View 1 (cartoon, rainbow, N blue to C red):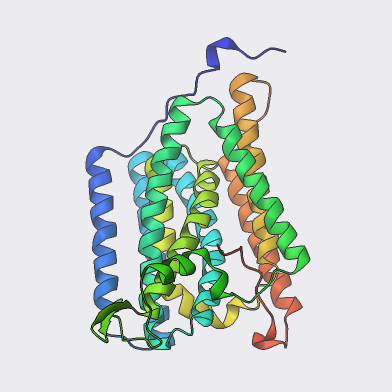
View 2: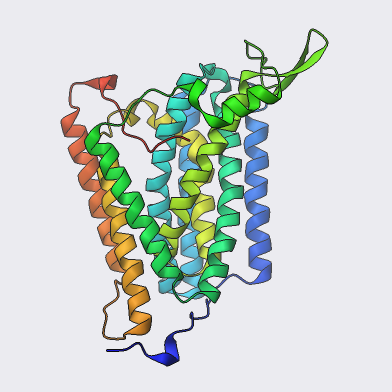
Length: 340
């Protein structure tokens, strides 16, 4: 059967995000980032009590936001938001694996860890915003954009599965990182950290500190994760505003969540398998959606079904990971995505 010529053009993207709502949300995100910078202005080791308190705060915010969306706009966009948020939150845990490896490779002092994480979150938010805008433009003008996004996710899922089965290298070789090599060619780097300073004057010359290197490395990994993350959430909702909101809420709480999960991260040995399944599922969902736009007899996957799949897969891999590492404590190694 040939495609229906009346629906070959990409559909218009409907959004609940009015200009004032966009402005209010961006202002709120900036205010929360400013609050985080105030909290981390004085380097200190993060206690579990502090980390849990901030984690609860950042988990409560998206719940309240989603309920507000439900009350104002109905169940459909609210369900899309909660599904997208859960998807982005699960993918953000993979970010934490790489952050953990980078902090260890650069021997970041415990008191500076949350500052590095905060810079990584800011970089991730900026990159996600750029990719979200590009994704919205592609969906509005290209009828095969969903097919492209689906292909990206299927390739990513295959790579995650390959790394998980093959046992990805858990060591980060700083000397081989392109971003680090480039910076070292441009400017000298001190041997020691100097608090939260990125640059210092040494022997009459301006030099970078190791903190500048690790922040650059963390932001470089943000590019990799943005390429995977944004197409994935567009598989849940086509609303650019909701895509931005899910990414923002998922990323804002990462700083505190890192310290809550730090001991448990190494036990989630099956997470990469679960993420591979989820990304492959969303990839197939996007391909089906593209096909449905051309052939209306092709079925689509409803949002509630996507939410159910994500919840079940995450629950299964968490339980199997804890079972597989029972009694092994922190000896188990995570299987993160690749660093650049």
